[in-house]
Amino acid sequence: DQQVKQNSPSLSVQEGRISILNCDYTNSMFDYFLWYKKYPAEGPTFLISISSIKDKNEDGRFTVFLNKSAKHLSLHIVPSQPGDSAVYFCAASSRNTGNQFYFGTGTSLTVIP
Amino acid sequence: DAGITQSPRHKVTETGTPVTLRCHQTENHRYMYWYRQDPGHGLRLIHYSYGVKDTDKGEVSDGYSVSRSKTEDFLLTLESATSSQTSVYFCAISATSGSIQETQYFGPGTRLLVL
Image (cartoon, rainbow over all chains, first blue to last red; front, side, top):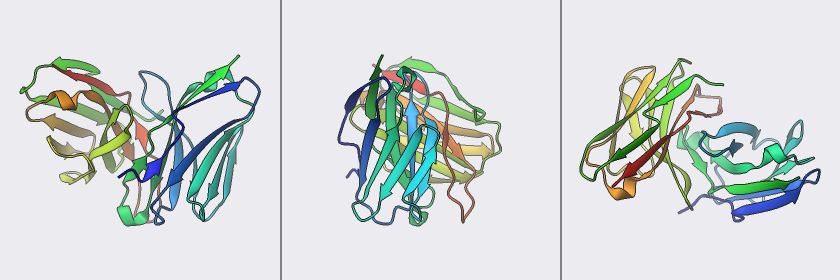
């Protein structure tokens, strides 16, 4: 049973425009959320995180929004650049699950020059 | 970048043979993890360790065992490899304390093909 879901396997965006990647979760106990970026043949790299006490966290071009009532988070990339083309995974964890992270299935972002 | 290496990076083996993958870290982090990545499934936790000789199962642990005799090394063993274990395996580390949730950092991955 997938506790973290990314329902869009792929997304294409023009360079300079906004990319919005979405993630839904089912476990209301999750209190920490992360986004990872993965290039082919490399390991995932940490991008940005958010605690459940916040509803927004920003780091440069990347902003993560958390809507706890909807159990939904999103990653906004503005402006999108060709180097952002990668697979993006969202992940969630809870103090009640120890330090186990649950990952979504990933969204492949293509930024078209 | 976090100091995490995995070996081998690529391996081809035959069904029924034992396989051991190694993860080595230079960060002295307490927690270490093994994941597998498969199309349509994302990253799934196999086993994790919260200290030397302290390990626990993840959601897809069947057919796998782990060992951690030193802080820096975490071994994943497939006792008798099957074709369903063909995958990309990632090791991750984190330094989580009991009250702080910290990020996991990933190694470069091992691509395993079981024929």
